[in-house]
Every structure is written in structure tokens, then in C-alpha cells.
Image (cartoon, rainbow, N blue to C red):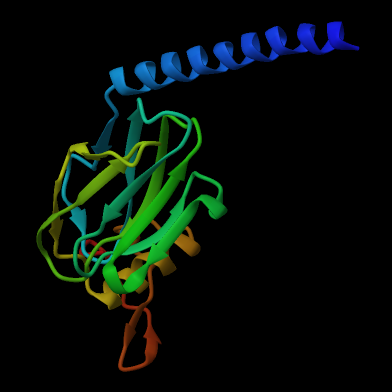
Length: 189
């Protein structure tokens, strides 16, 4: 019995040394890698109150990381390409936390403010060691005035009826009555 105990101890020592070496190498590899995240916003202005997509590319965050985006005032988070369980929305703070496990890119959809102006996005990438890195790339988006609600409704109705702009047979709404006017056009719409 003494011989079997002696054989087990060197095996345990070898396993322990291997684990220690693996840990040291893993930590040095993780520490040597620099985590980055880059945001991509639409290049053109977006209309007030409309939805648009924000792209995020992330790397070097280790086994797991988080991107915490702070949306501009008046913007509203809608959806994401990540699993819904990986997204946490804090409406009061206007932040959205995206948890990553190996993903290198994802996108999310937001609705722009109803007010025209220039707005700034900000965000942080947290790596598996909880180090924080600023999200680079696009930060600013321009929101231009959108069409009035009645114009939106008219355009949606025209699309639903497959009516093209400038159709002379289009009926117009006047004083809550549909009226067909000879030679009427929809050039404005």
C-alpha cells in the first residue's frame, strides 16, 4: 500500500504543476491581448422618429465580455441580433448592456428622437477581467426633421394600395369626404 501512495503523489504534483503553468500562460495571453469595439452608424442623416441599425464589432475581450451602450436622449432601443437573454435594457439610464460569449459582431435597432438635431452615442467594452475600453468608431448621428404624421399615413396608404406618386386617378381626402377631381395629381406625395 505504501508504494501506491508514493506513485499518486508525483502524479498529483505533475497535475498541479501543469494547471499552474496553464493558468500563467492563459493569464499572460489574456493580458497581452487588447480588447476593442467599434461602432458603425448610418453615414447619412436619419429622419426623426424612424428606426435605424447600429453595428458593433468587438474582439480581444476573452471568454466573455459586455458592450454597454448609452443611447442619446430621446432614442429608444428596439431589437438586437444577439439572443434576447444576452441583452439588458435600463430605460431610466438610457443604456443597453449586450453580453458577449465569443461573438465578434452584432447589430441593434433603435428609433431616433422625434426632435431634429445632432446626437452622440457612447459606450464601453468590458473584457472578461472587467477592464473597460471605450467603444471606438462612429459616435455622432444627425437626425433630420421627418415627414408630418399625416404625410406618413398618406404614404403608407399609397403603398398599401400600390398607388404610385403622380397617379392622376388618385382620390384625395378633403373635409373627411373622398372626392375625385378631374386631372388631380399626387405630385406632392
